[in-house]
Image (cartoon, rainbow, N blue to C red):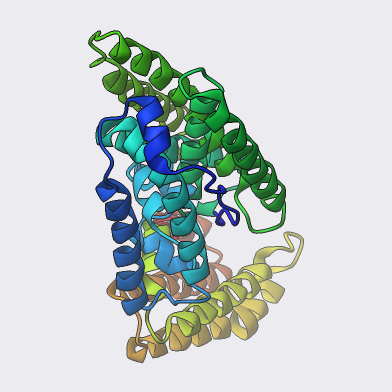
Length: 383
């Protein structure tokens, strides 16, 4: 998700707002800690080859971005980790700047427990909205969903009567400008505006729960239930959505292998070899499409088209032994070669059937051979 690009104007010192809110403390250790985690993750990813200005989406997936096929097939933790991953240094710097400008108000106002709970929960809920909106799939990351959540929370506090009007009005104007501008900016291609809206709305709702909690605190009533409630609701929404939209895991291993293989020098070369194999496969199988052809014509096509294609495919996949690719990719190449050998045996059975006309002897063998081929090919597709 892209970054917010406009921050709140500082018309009043945080201490003034802090005093008005009867806040629990004034330091920004948690805000600095969140910024530090984001920066550290970005540095480690850059060292690992993720890029600094323009990044490779594969690396983001490896580190835990909100990638639909994986999040919805078991990687629930991506709802959290993606909040600390960024697509380039500009994305990171703008998000951290916006987090700081809202953090100097909210951390002293709320205290660290409420602040951390709101940040993580709005980040998770923003990620869920992103998955819900992008039915075709998404690879999303960034702190902006959680940051919009904090601005939504701040908005809820500002529309209450907890803050004096002379402080509230200028801040409301600045917050409103920030939200409208960045939602409008988010309409451009490449920005995950759905996460922004999800964070904003969830933050506003959590903010109202906090307003009730703060009012009770001022009346010296216990408010220990608000944080477990927010956490429980967030976990419940996440569990319900992931359960209702769970994707089958049959392609998961193949996808993970593809992602893990992307960092090898000959990964693209291997993918091209697999694509060429698919084309050879289709040409070889095409000899059986004409069901009205004579046995003699079929035999000629088998010998002149199918068998040469399968042998050429075997040579092609054999060359991948020297490729710099992952172990799962080498294993996949071995299974493809085993599949090709079964196909060559099938071609030989067809030739024998045509020569001898012994249907009772060779038809069951061909059926059995094709069953083996189908089973093996299914294994290959899952790799």
